[in-house]
Length: 281
Image: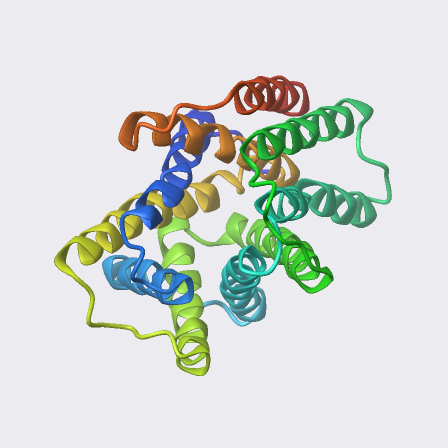
């Protein structure tokens, strides 16, 4: 693993705060289909980072391409799951990402995850479940198909992080971010057409929310995650992403006046403790 950067942990914290804003921003653009939203956030960042775009080295091209496709399919699977199963089930199943990452990294090393990391992740996942249960709509329907899509979304997010971990030691994070966002946008554009998701005709407010989503969750969020994954394991980055529900709840309370319930607050506290245990040096 490359020598640690003093910016690694600040970058991870900023990244988590940035991706936590996605849910609030999505609420501000209800007319935009989720797949179209994912397209515009990645396409805009691909344009912004175009000066840093470099052709991948022959050995890195397949992994970079796979990372972009996995990110695009992650967006699709997760958004689709929310339409077919309850928020509780979708959130918990998507947030199994750290487990898939830990298993994959352990298999590649031929060793089991450390008990501390595994215990911390399981505790954080318990917190995600408590938090989601505290916010769940008891009338929400659940389906096997929706659960499967959420599970697939978590696996695809894990693959996205692992491919990035394989490439980042040799590629600058801005160049890699430009490559992944370009691939992701090119994958999502035809998918949006297939799903009948319009890519234009939005209100000014919706375009503003899309611009904020590109600059926040995608540029600061995902690009800084790509920066960090060079210096810490993908399993640590995945564990940090479990803080997203906590950040989203805090931002919703400030921006939308949606105060967390007692269950959400308890779940958030459990998540914080679990992530602290899993990522402690």
